[in-house]
Length: 109
Image (cartoon, rainbow, N blue to C red):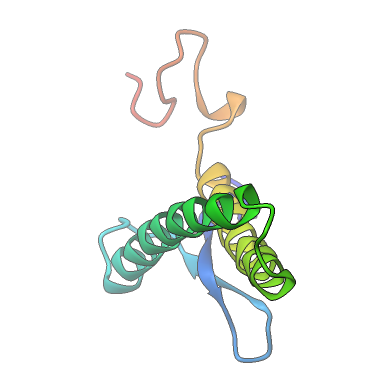
């Protein structure tokens, strides 16, 4: 297992704006559960913002300030969703982690 799969990218940044990581354990620890809940909230918020933005962008008479606000919120949510996708993608098994039958090599007999 390499460093890429042993560290989990967390869905928040440090106060300095740097990525935060968690050493993978069982995945049932407090920080791991908090990260899962935070990711779920970020994805739900992204969907809500998308619905609202589509409504604003679908109205040709929407004021510029509303269109700008929608774009700002969409870009914030997109950053969150990309971080969630990267984090989850890092935790997917790679071809090296599975045998030719597709079974997880760590659990294969």
